[in-house]
Structure formats: structure tokens, C-alpha cells
Image 1 (cartoon, protein in one colour):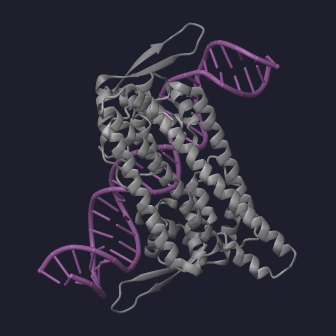
Image 2 (cartoon, helix red, strand yellow):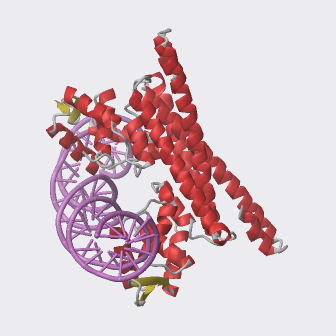
Length: 196
Length: 196
DNA sequence: ACGCACATGTAATCAGTTACATGATTCT
DNA sequence: AGAATCATGTAACTGATTACATGTGCGT
């Protein structure tokens, strides 16, 4: 039940919640996401799938198509969806990395879901805390910092600013949509609006 | 000699190159850098220090001050500085993470060092490649992406843009400084100029 | 007296990579 | 014919975390 750990397992469960896939497909999808979540090896994917299977969070369908190589398609179960819901709703530990943030973000499909807003707000707090620590460190180092150190600080400040801007914009959009849907005015437009 | 691995060991060697420190100090410094490089546990720091000691890349000075707890101050050796120089000059594998980029950036002290510019350019290429992969994936997914997926894509695009902007600005600054110092006009100002 | 910051270490465990092992299909 | 892509898995290893183990000095 550790939150930061096992996140990879739950992330692939989240991918299966959107669409039934094989281990190979999962690798392709994660490759497409690049360094947003990282591209684990098959040595991580297949054991994770086997573990999910043993916990009855997924089922397999083995396709032995003649002329084509063996293919196992994994699908999420009801218990899997419940476990996934519990995972995305969990508060993230502050030590959690950017990758873990994105891993939890991706399975979230409902713009009205309070877990989504909470997730973004938690990330915002973590980024603000990181930024403050960076500013404090920069002030302490002051003139003594080497060129590389100085550049690293600048880099950290620049990227946290950008992340903060994005988070604020996303939260503002989401909150506007939530208000709109709470007024019961064309709730399907709230969903559209949140997508871009 | 693997590049991505062992980077943590070389990073602490880089910290010791700037200033002799204890294991506890290293932890404090890395905590100050926050998620830029991550905050490893003592279970990682002390063994790394012991390994560096065995390779003669660092030396220890044991302070047994009466009234104060035991303190071991680690200093970099000549061999350590050579190994560090070789490490920062190594081309980074494209799979290397953002943390590894920052870890190598921090020990770089010389603005005229070609390894510094090469490092930033390599990172730039990696970010551009990541961005292209993200755009391709976004185009493939198109309308089928769930809210979370869509937000993750937007997030990735926003952060890569910011990183690219920073890298371009840093490279422009560095190149301007290099030109200035090559003209032999007050080379110490080139150093000052690159710090901010 | 109690807890917190300082200060160092080891052992069990874990998550993940790399290398190994296999085999069909499709493109050049 | 050979390479690349599709497709699945296991075993050895590695890097790191967590928990354990120990002890001092300082503030309240």
C-alpha cells in the first residue's frame, strides 16, 4: 500500500482501464510518452502484469492466431477499477516525483472528479515548496556558487515557474468547468471545454 | 564506466570538488537542491563515500573532537579531480534523465569549457526529441485521449517549451561570453557576465 | 526528562535494468 | 538471406530505499 512504490503497476492498470492491451502495447504507449513517465523494460512490464493477474485486478485473453505470434491481451476487472480509483484518490507523498504525478494524472478521466483537482493542488504545493527551498539555497550560496551551480539554480527556477503557470492555468480551467456543470447548464460542454 | 549509472557517486565527488564535506553535509546540500537531483538516503550516501575512498578518489579526515560527535570530512584527491573531469566530459546517453543532466551540470565551473556547451547542446537535442515524440503521440491520440492523457500531453509540451527556452538562453549567453574571451578583452568579465 | 538536530553506519529488501532465451512475421 | 518488428518470458545483477542500530549535544 505504499504510494510512491507500486505506482508503475497502478499506472499500467490505468492504461488497461482505457483500453485492453498486451505487454508489448504497453511498452509502445510508454515509449510514446517519452520521459514524461519513462520507458520501462519488458523485465518490468511482464512481471507487473503477472502480479496484477494474481491479484485479480486484470484478466488475460490468449490469442493463438494461426500465422501470427502468440498474443496476450490484458483487460481490467471490476476489482481493478476499484483499486485504480483508490490509488488515484490517495494523497501523494510530498517526496513523490514528477513522473509519479503524471502517472496518476493520466488515468483521470472525469473533469468533475475532486481527486483530479486535489491532485493538481497537491502538485502545486510540492512545486511551491521545491521552489522555496531552491530560493533559500540560492540565497545561502549567493556569490559563492560555481557557474554550474548557478545555472542549475536558474534552471530549477525557470522550470518550476513554467510548471506553476501550467498548474494554475489547468486549475483555473477546471474550476470554471466545475462551476459551469454545477449550474447544470449543458454539462457535456464542460467536458469539451476542459479538453484544450 | 557506465554513464547513467554511478552518476550519483560522481555527483557527490563533484560536491567534494567544490568543498570538503561530511556525508551528513552532502545530504543537507542535496536536500537544498530539492527535486533537482533528489535527496538520497544515508544508506546510499555512506556506501558511495566508502567506494570513492577505496578508489582513492577521495580522502577522509576523522575529527574526534572531544565534546562533539565523530565527524568525517571527505576531500577530493588529484585522481578524483581527473575522474570527475572525465565524467563531466563524457557524452550523455540519450536515455539519461533530467536529474542526471543537472548532476553533471553542477560540477562544471569553467564557462569556456567546451564540455559545458556540449552538455547543454546534448540536453537540447534530447528535449527536442522528447517533444517531437510527444507531438507525434498527441497527433495519433487526437480526439481519443482521455482528459488526464490530454492534460499530461499539455503538461509535457509546456515544460519542454520552458526547458528549451532556458537552454537556448543559456547557450546564447555562454557563446557570447566565449567570443568575448576569445577576443582576449577582459576575460574575467566574461566569467562574471555568465553568472546571471 | 524528552525530543530534536547532529552524526555514522549496516542489513534486509525492493524495484528495475541488462542480458539471456525463444520464436514467428514482414520488409528490403 | 538478413534485418527489423512483433511477441513473450526468466535470471542475474544493481542501485537504492527502509528499517535497524548506536551515540552526542542542545534546547525546553
